[in-house]
Image 1 (cartoon, rainbow, N blue to C red):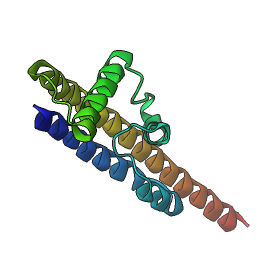
Image 2 (image 1 turned 180 degrees about the vertical axis):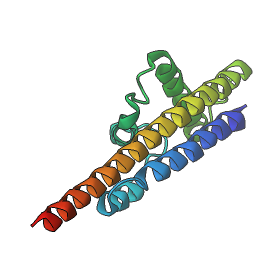
Image 3 (image 1 turned 30 degrees about the vertical axis):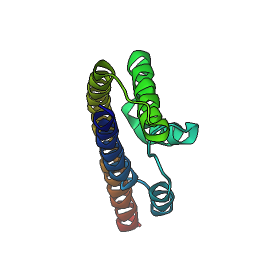
Image 4 (image 1 turned 180 degrees about the horizontal axis):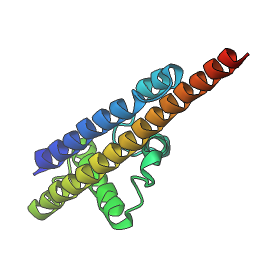
Length: 145
């Protein structure tokens, strides 16, 4: 059952890596490099959660806004750590809870990542349109003089 808990966490970490990479690609180059060099592994450290929430901010939500799911995810991480670091075997029910929790967490993570990416892409398109309109205004003023 311990392997089940660990594999559920691996799936979450792959999803995290995907979302962080996808959202960091939409940042300025210097910020992108810093984000890519940062780690958002297990979300067990405050700065990992803060970085993920900053990336997800355009979605209007935070990964830890769903209190019940966040609490269950933290319990799962503790279960995973207990198995890996102290060889404490989870029960079959606990392993099933980890699988269910990680699946729900992954769905939430990918949904928020998609919403954030769409918001960033829309802002980029709006910025491009605004820059094009500014260029047209500048050209029009130049033609009038």
